[in-house]
Image (cartoon, rainbow, N blue to C red; front, side, top):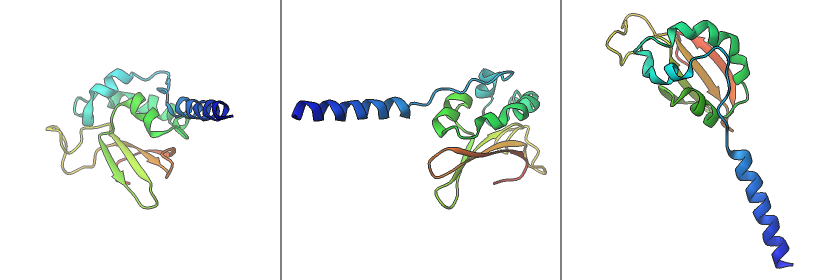
Length: 130
């Protein structure tokens, strides 16, 4: 009896750990290596991918935060919101921390809204902050 319970516990733990691993999202027409190398949009490599991103942004709904990080790299900025939500922000144009940033104008950015269970509930391309 003890052996069966232990086997059941290990099986449940194994299934949980397998389902918890999030794979990288495969996206067509996106140069994800140049995206990841362009931290804060300072190199302006993300700007050329805006239209390609618009075409695939709805495919990212429901993905979890780890899948986003594996796909796009670490976010340039993370903001916490009420009700355990947060925002992952990736700059498409140079952010305020870049030398070539225009201080009089907000940078264009991709904003992922993640719900309380860390799933993408909204994807926005905007100059406004969340």
